[in-house]
Length: 111
Length: 136
Image (cartoon, rainbow over all chains, first blue to last red; front, side, top):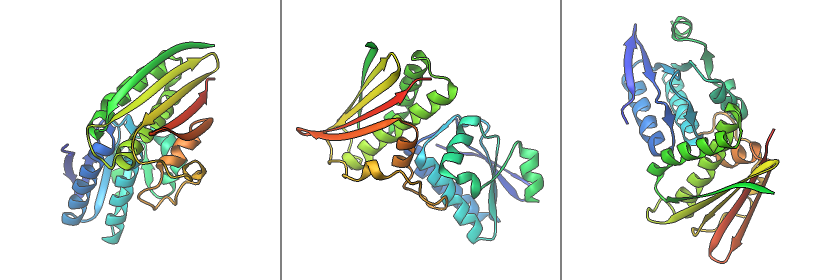
């Protein structure tokens, strides 16, 4: 699995896939970590296409957040479906990530 | 009274989980679950089967996992069976979600949060996990 990535004014924007399960979560974790370590630690994740994710995907996102914050950066999320938001609320991940409705709001906040 | 029953079998391969997700999603919708219920119950099954593969079979392919699905008048009953390492006795007490900063440990709390009952048993050489979710 190759995550789609682009850079916007020094901020890395990565689109997560439609489905993120354990078979791909480790790969996603590695790619996000590499991106953070080689970039400036500022990452925006696009979840507009992500309809389903499991606990291993949650772990991969938390891992990327820790990597970013160690580097003085952060990870913001946008485009979350109501189902994924319910998962974030159940797991309380919504308390550690900043979550925005759309990309423009996430990029504005990160600048 | 059981109104609809289906059995799914799956090889112990994490790459098969995507197909399982599609199958369970379709079963949920056929059973009348709304979008939210479909997502939650599908995730419950994915988490439980992932656990069978990762912990029960230690990620080793070539083993079978069986999922019996029953839609009754007022609930959905799911029985998941594998012949892997027995489940730890404490899994059903893992109701507390780990801190949000933790990278793991969310699987069982998710399963228990989004089902109405859960039972485990070791019957012969099989692990048997019974999950029930009431329908709205």
